[in-house]
Length: 616
Image (cartoon, rainbow, N blue to C red):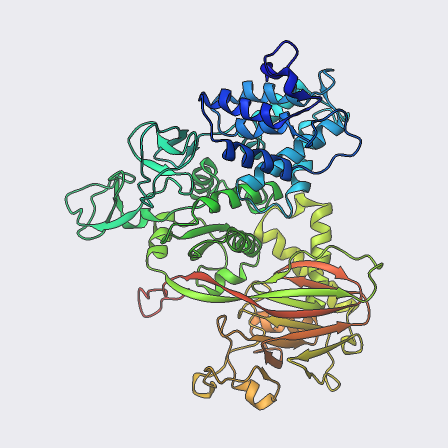
């Protein structure tokens, strides 16, 4: 940078904030400490920097071909460099403090956000929703909220902001509990221990552990590769207990020896995993702190998943409710994995409907986590359908609540139950202190359901909407309904099976020739639910009272209306809706529901009876 400033040997190649092609080539030679750098490669890099920049109108003096921004070039190469985060944050501040007044103003902050967006693209992140998260992140650094950021605010905020450090290239160490990884430059041909490919690149081609000789290319992550081993005479290096015959696992890279259940890999955020599991085991878990998902962490999760994309065999444990599970499944979709890993659930939410269906239970009650890990070892793989939801408003100018998700994992509903959920959600946002435990949440749901029974806010629902299943209209004229539920799994409202059970002797066999839509009431009575059959179940609800009767077992099911592969719903007025327990108020619209894909999930092993009177 000094070479391009006044008095520097490259200053005649600088035009305002930009440098020309020859200056860029000389910069590369100086930076890489080489006398001869391929001209065609230099030209390609130069053109890449040009194409990645948006045109800035009214620019001051610049080279004939437009040049490239020296600050952007500097920040890109800083991603490859080692150094103390504080020193690099100070350098970045001075780099973007264009007028030298010791403050980052709004225009300068915007430039930093733009640069971080480019860095995210360079790292292979999904940037479709990144900009709002970065804006929130930068606003939080402005401690006194005066619209400008001082150098001290920048450094103090940056030192505690992991996404910022990653996107500015300031956080180069990556810990996995066994190794401390750093980017390293290799002077001779070197090969990755995982994929066996040569480490490629000009500088710092791969990851190396400070404490041993294990090497990984940048496309891999430092995880253990477990193989079964006869460890009869060994002790587990985690729990220090003797390993039974043929019950051990050994990492082929670092030779760590553990009991089989400890070879489960937890894909979360480094030290937070250990802290979370310790707090769960000690019974000191703060419900809201771990179950609410911050949008900024979406990109940390995506970044972690990106490292796993070439790994062939591992599992993910999601500690949270149905919303957290859906969030992780979305991240897996976006990460474009070679093999989508199966997901197990430690249920920490309110309803935990998906966890119930997969036999992980209705809520974690503080049992021994060692036993839980053993159940993951014994679990089986099942497929789960996931569905895409498209909402087309009748009037683009009519404003409603933002739609919480475009994917159905569990269920979609309109009417009475969505009304209760929407009121619950609104109250929880206003008074979060009243909703800090699973028990309190269930009591509030009960109170709101009782008031909904009295008010019947969604009566005569059939006059407000029409439903078509694969083009076949449903006749609702003879029914008095206050709610419609579209089901993917056999659990809703914290354990209610709205479709109901179907006797095994009466079940209709499903095969490749099974019809795409069923509306005949007699056939529906013999049709069972299956989360992997690429069919949705449509159920009618008479009201909150009927929902309570189904939940308590006083009634076996709601009104079975259809099974179908595609559903279209048209509404004529604003109605409450919800997807997987996340509600919103939707103006008149047309809703299209179609099959998206299937997720790999883990089903817990059946409960082992300990005696004749054993119940769970």
